[in-house]
Image (cartoon, rainbow, N blue to C red; front, side):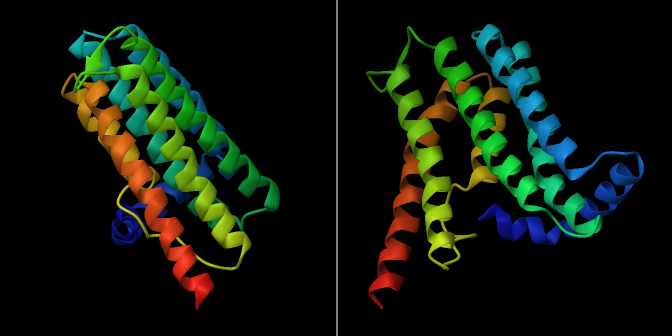
Length: 199
């Protein structure tokens, strides 16, 4: 969904990527920096439960993490094309980043509930959904079928949901939304694969 919007700001991102590349930031370093920021965001969410200023800080750090995640592929392309190592690093560290942020928020609201259901359930559901969105895409691409742009909650959308809910002081509500949206996206992609494989 927002992957399509990303193409509209490709020029600005490319300009930023060129500047950072000249400053010595490689694609792999951008990927690692994204994980470091995601880890800092997760910790800030964890210690900031019930504190709107801290959850706002956590949200802005997460937004910065998403910014570097969007840039790493562009930097790789400008530098002459990505490598298999870079692709692997990006995929693995993105999953760690997703898991850490969701875990940080879940642990912060461990003793609370939403819609009469323990928040930990929504956190687990959000984590499973987020991982499945990526797994189904990877499986599809392994079968030669592209899934980019399919689904309502790809990674950029999920990051923005958590950023927005954190800025509003309710990152736990963000977990609830992702629990539904990510699993729905995984099912959308699975359904798309099934229909294409069946011909």
